[in-house]
Length: 387
Image (cartoon, rainbow, N blue to C red):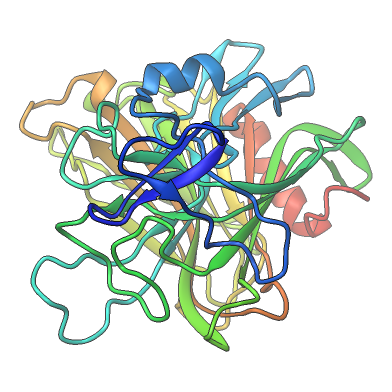
């Protein structure tokens, strides 16, 4: 397979090395100078619907510890497309290319943006054409996976991927503005994401199978003309709300947990019998460690997302949004509801000599009581997971 470019339409395609598509010529410009080229990305020919992806994506890098099953989407940048709680059969992740459990970046747009430009948003999973249904568009691609180590053979299971993230919203009509890059190509940012998943975690000496740790690091490519660049880095968790209950009847519980004090603060998303759809609740973790817990009304099933580092400024934060994908459809059909939890470091200096300090997040899946205690134990332990 090779990557081809149509210089007239600025379109890229992956196809057979021996058979260039009509109007296209070989293109391989994004690897480091002097390195072995890695040609192409996984958009084959001119068709790749989400149904095609789901049928082929999960046969290579899955991890299963008999309590949680984690499925890695090899086509969409090795992002996590499914996490299944085996005891109940609940699959808790929204699997679409713009959702998943993955790493995303944001860049502040420069002053004086031309009309129609967008804020750059490279993502681990890949990119899609703006303004269309990305399950149907032909202008679509998964981020190229440069290297993979794992999964390891024994617990805790680890999988490390290095990904060349694509600009998520790529369009000839609405280009992103970049420094040192071509704003009209999906391979816009000259950098890498290194992402490590660890399934099962040793907490205070005991192996706990209800924990998934995610760590992401960033680095510029060697041939970048920039010395450094500032980014906002996020570990995102798009979760399936119906797995926990029906928010339309106040059927789920959301709470912030201060992991240093154990204090809980309820997120009041249900006011006057109405769900506050698409409202984002934000909490910084300045001088304390923080978790967000979502649970069923009876507490039998819950998930906690935690960060164990204590920030020194409000640039580090966690946010949660109850999303209705069709807000005009009141009170919102359950299959159109999502829970988006983002662990964010808003100011990163990314260089090309070394990866930055990892952004780590921890997911615990259990009952509400066990999830809460596990989060507090992780804070005491420090969250290394391997030792």
